[in-house]
Image (cartoon, rainbow, N blue to C red; front, top):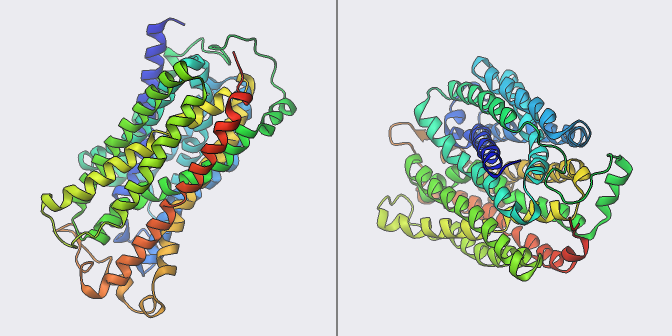
Length: 454
């Protein structure tokens, strides 16, 4: 495949990823709307938050159960054919959401979308390795991850441009279908192992299972759960956290997160490009060094943002800018490690087994993303003093004023224990990145030995 066509394939894939991640992230921008919607069951804020969390977690859990099937199918019949099936699942689920009149219908629509949204990930991971040779995969996976993160901004843009939120999902569904058809058209001829220098053997499940015995594969599969739990929490509840803890409007909270999202996209690109360059000069272990460095810098900076002693209710930009920069730099440096996860995994697994291995990786990856939104409100409840739990304060802090777009009671002095409970919960979850950092150190020892040289 020519260089120009390869670039077109990656571009079409990046746009598709941007669109379906926009649909996946849209929930983060409508949490406050759903809390006040009769379609969400429950009376207390924690009940409503749980039901909202289910809209993300349950589809992802169901999707992970099925994704092993899609991974094996991608290794047997090809990545493009399996990808087309996932595109149809996503389109169907998103197209049905506007017609949901109760929670069961809404959840069912999210589940259909979630099957495709979750199932397409291992196929895309393997597909990128089919398109790009090992020395360029850092950039390829960076394009995927940058697009996935920019989907957060895409979600915000669609949220502002298309009303109501149900229609937004429907519009995104139509765009996913059209872009997916474009990708399938321009990627004709892409085959399993097409970018490899060695021959591809016939897929056998027993041989694919042997890949899971490699220390690097084991390390990545364990690490990915602890890596993604914080991301699952942040992408679902970051806006809500800033509104509650800082007492600012949804507009300010969204802008803060959008700046952070741009920094994440930059982190993906820098991580991919830099790791490719360092790997060419210093050897494959250079990728691991870049990941360790990124997390080592980003984690303490991110924690500083979460525990920042923000003067609740203050909306002056001279005050907002300080924690905003902490959030941006914390996420950017931490994200440098992200594209290297899939690069390392693709380097230590043969082409004909990658769909299967990536499907198991995706199960654990999605598990972390699903646990995050559930763990956050659960820990916040645990961290609250018993007398606070029994009072009306947790409910009062979520009373939303549509005019000011703020939680009107969050800055009352009586609410301090509630705000602190949210802070302790977020801090605990982000600290899980320490485990990921330690595992990256072990990968530095095993990676070169396990690598498949093509």
